Image 1 (cartoon, rainbow, N blue to C red):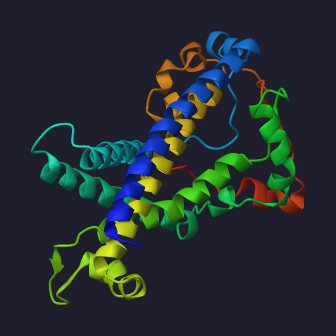
Image 2: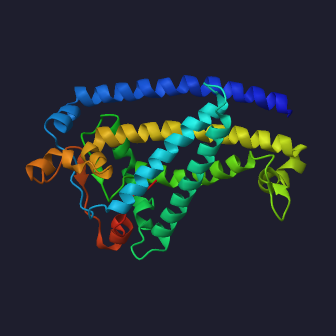
Image 3: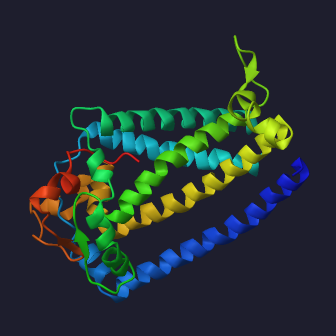
Length: 297
């Protein structure tokens, strides 16, 4: 496939994703209307009935890293779209610098988060494992989100949809970083005298499809697709964070003092609507609850 055809593929992708994103926004608007019509929005935002959490309070450092991660993802999206569609002149060198700086911060955060999950004293990887009970309760979770059931099972810190999304984020971030570095065609690394394009895709993919430039063109397409997948997933993630647990959303960004329960010194209801605890059998307790930790992805 020639570079010219691959360029046309990018144009088709523009059409697909710029059409899909407004559809997703409309779908989320319709979903929130469902929250209004079923009374969920009134119970949450007016009566301030949000889920109660049984895990330890999240410390300041994880909150800071999560905020930093979110800001860098925003910078990556903004600078990436500018590189694709420059909306002012002369900004590409600066935006590329912003893009690669934000990518470096995100990858450092990812490495730290993986170490925290698997190597730290309070490792919490079990909280993200999709176990048999998650799979069997998935239909109930889905029925809750489409307003067929009034509540969803509460097995642990995250439900099966959250776990699946966070697990998906890890390979997406890694592939996104590698394909992004593969676009550095003209910067040669010292000592080995190879560009990042040669090092990542040129030596193996180039010979298979004809040239390093074609390999870089394929990497650019993959990078662009994943960029849009992040935009879609983060948009949905933010919407659900606000609509399903706005109190936790405020707390995670250091705004817990705005939580009405905090201001009134009340703990809130023992069992909030939409949040049905399901005790775990002793044999599965470790799989369900895991160690105390925090979500940084």
